[in-house]
Amino acid sequence: MDKEKMENELKRCLGCKISFCQKGCPLGVSPHDFIKLALEGNYVEAQKVIREKNPLAETCGLVCPDSFCQKTCIRAKKDSAVAIPCLQAMICKKVPSEKLALPSKNNKKIAIIGGGPAGLGACFELLKNGFSVVIFEKENKLGGAVRLIPDYRLPKDVLDKEIDYITKNDRVEVRLNSKVDNFVELEKEFDGVIIAVGEQDCRKLGIEGEEHSVQYKEVLLDVKAHCCQKVLVVGGGEVALDCAVSLKKNGAKEVYMAVRRRRDDMRIMKKDFEFLDANGIIIKDLCSVLKIKKNGESLDLTIIKNEINEEGKARAIIGSDENWSGFDKVVIAMGADCSDLFKNLEMIKCGDMTGNAGTVVEAIASGVNGARLLIDKFKE
Image 1: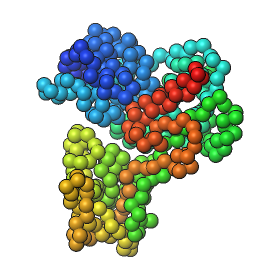
Image 2: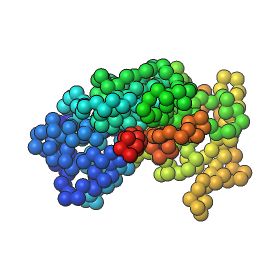
Image 3: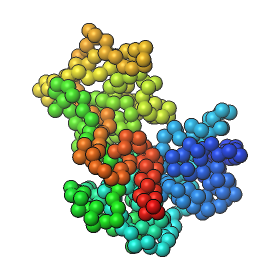
Image 4: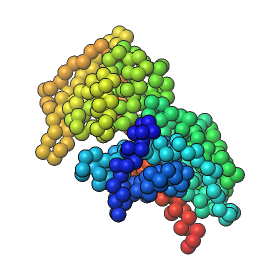
């Protein structure tokens, strides 16, 4: 979006008396207010309004789906919703974030296990309330699953810049390559503990020959290593989309997506369908993989067709088996689950591991809310 398009999009905001768009944001950011400031040319204050509640503001602007602020935008009733996430990203890009303002210390130190969006959201809220924080991250960089988002959607320098905005101060200690196993000792060492480890266990199909497939995390961490002539991506959400498009952009000749439900049921945005079509991704809907068989250097698949029953659920059609052959790779891109090790811990949990934070903004909000629960305990 260039300067002229940005200004025209800002003018499309109706300035509603009731900020439905703010109510639609999991973090409570007010598009009404930051758009009004931007229209006045006050981009500095506009980005302050955004970053007051969202520490990963530009990141969210680039990757947020249309199911939050845009879904509640009244303008959509007239023609189409204002491109709020895009405007947020542009405003934050236009004005570099200032150093995070910190209140007086309260001499309480909190451990956060996991440095993804939920852990960073929790850190942000704790810092705003005078706490010191130690983040334990098992990988060599902070960011968690957000680092799996391809560069064409989220340049990593944007993410790194916003992580620094949260963590580059004397209240935060980051311990990378630090996997936590002894939670009892951690509780003794710190005044409080928040777990935000995300979803570690990739979901599996549980089918014969699944060992011949690869998981989406492997692909998104090193796309070029997995490029081939013909590939099937199993899944119909954003992760599957990222795998399919990334593989195609990096040289894969034929890329298919196997979707259990109907094309219109896929958990992606309307503009994503256009993006898939533009990149030549072939969607095979209403089908499930039953078997993967190694055939020399290629993979042959047994597929069964599905139908949607009266309850709206996908149901296999008996006798509809098909054979698909000649694939070089099958990618399972159906998301992940939280390890049972963490589910049973009696500590504050937030992010993906709660089961209700499937997007970046929801994960941040979950972290913020988890931090508030802990803060409230100190007030009792």
